Picture 1: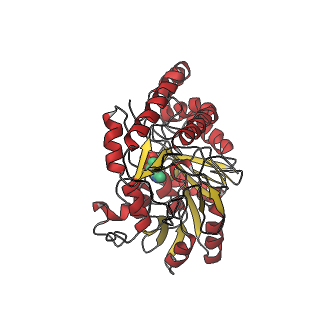
Picture 2: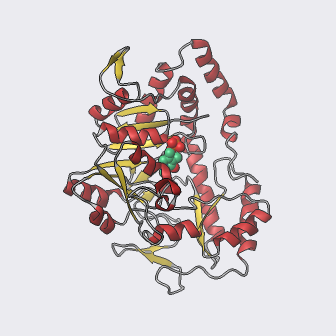
Picture 3: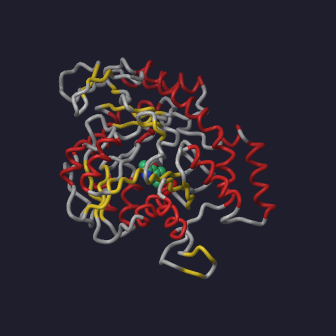
Length: 398
Ligand SMILES: *Cc1c(COP(=O)(O)O)cnc(C)c1O
């Protein structure tokens, strides 16, 4: 069983997507045309925001969002240590330096005390990541940012459609999305977007994505070329109306996983914070013997993935960079890298495949050690958040 069948969405919408691709091919307009404009308006509306500027990838969306805010060499941006490295490389690409902080113990958000401690006179922005489709705790981070005069640039590459305290992810000040094929809303190639309520930021990203020009051969700033092409925009327009239904299927599958696996002592299932309506980009369990668990599951024919096996500060990419750091620097992130395992999850995962995954995980867990609790008590019925709330260990909401 594959981890994800990226072609399944196409097969579901084949007639619509084929028609859209032919429409673009016949139009003779392949860049900066009606499909792009249409998609930008439709995705901004979906996000409950005013502006969407679509670009070549999620990394570009993050980079151009930062550059639009004037962030560059000499600046620092506070990022999570536990994230896809794309968050970091986008900061580095501007010339600024990513400064990492560990997550809260549940891995769901940035540790606010560590964010405060990471702020220096060079800090310009905080970049929360809505990892695995679960919103980060934005309000405390926004409060810190406001107190220190920092921008909040959200990495929503995994969270199309999620909600934070009822508000759509994407309705914030500056939010970057990816349309990489495996994302909740995926193109048939690369794509990304900056969504913002700030007209000046939108205008600046429009300039930056198009060689610094609004009008042909009138170049106002040094910029790059990062445009979402008309084919990708047309595919995304065909898929966007299905996103809510696809996310609902992900949520249902995640809840079924938790009901089926939540009582296994050897694994910890993912939790949902009371502020969150996640969209389950990934379903990530934890196990003290993750590698052995994974070997056994794969032997049963089920493909799993690890998101992510090496924390960015421990990769060769940051070995010679001040952001790189020796083992033990961000212990919670390193532990997550060692214990996390993603199970197959997507809108097109069938019941039979779901049952096969559950059976494989249950069988694989036999004989492995119980998963330790963060406080070491061995009782895993609830957890305590850093601000003292006690939450049940389940995906049931509120
Ligand atoms: C996918 C992803 C990115 C980068 O998006 P691309 O479109 O692949 O460039 C950035 N951050 C996170 C958290 C992602 O999951």
